[in-house]
Length: 323
Image (cartoon, rainbow, N blue to C red; front, side, top):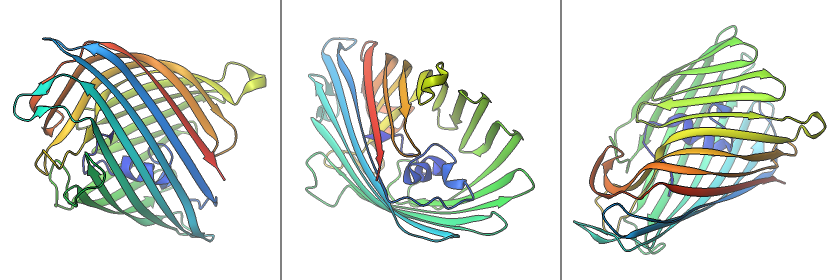
C-alpha cells in the first residue's frame, strides 16, 4: 500500500527514487552521499462503517537508497522499498468476499542521472515490484516501471520531458506515456511546476516559512505550510495541511491486473518535523480523516465494490537517517 500509483505520475515516482519532494531529481547538481534509510507508520483506529460493521487500517513502510557511484557529472542510485497494509474489518466486498488481512509490496529500483555543464539533466529510472497478500507466493503481482527524463534549462526556467512505461498500471498499463512540465522560477523564493499529469508550487516567503501545494489530473491534491517559530531551534518546525487522495494496492490473488484496492480520504493534519542535516529528518503528525471510501476497481473514481468508513482520527510518524 503506497502512494497512488498511476503510471504517468512520473514526478512522484522519480522523487521517491531520489528520496525527496517533487522535483528534487531535477536539481542540476550531483550531491554525493552514502546511504539513506527511512521508515514510517500510519495508524487509522477502528471506526464504524456506514451501514454496519467496523474498519481499521495500519500502514508500515521502510526504504533504503544508496549512491553506488558518482562523479562531478553522473550518479547511480540503487533503492528498495517495502510496504505492508494491515486491514481489520468484518465488512465484505459483494463480488469478492472478505477484506484481505494484509497487502504487501516490495520494490527494487535504480536511478541514473547525468548533469551537463549547461545544467541539462538526462536520466532513467527502472524498478521491478512485486505485490501479494501472502508475500511472495507467486509472480502474478510482479510489475516493471521504466522512465527516461530530460531537463532542458533556460536562463532561469526549464522544460521537463519524460516518457514512462509501467506494464501493470491500473490506467493505460503497457503503453509508453509522455509527460511535459514547465519549471518556472518567478522569484528566487518560488518554484512552480506546471504540467501534465502533476503540478506543484513551493514558496518560501522567509528563511523559516514554507508553503507547498500540489495537484494532479487524477484528483489528488495537497496544501501544506510549515514554520520554524523559534530562531534558536531552527531545526524544529511546526506544520499543518490538508490533502485529498488515496493509497492503491494490488491484490493479485483476487483482482485482475488492472484493478486495485483503493483507500480514499480527505485529511487535515498538524504536527512537528525535525531536520538535523540533509538526510536526518523525522516527523510526527495527527489529524482527521473524512470523505472516506474503501473499495476495488480500475481507478480511484470508478470503484465496483466499496464501503464507507465513518470519519475518524489518524496518527503518522516518519524517520529518515543518512549514513
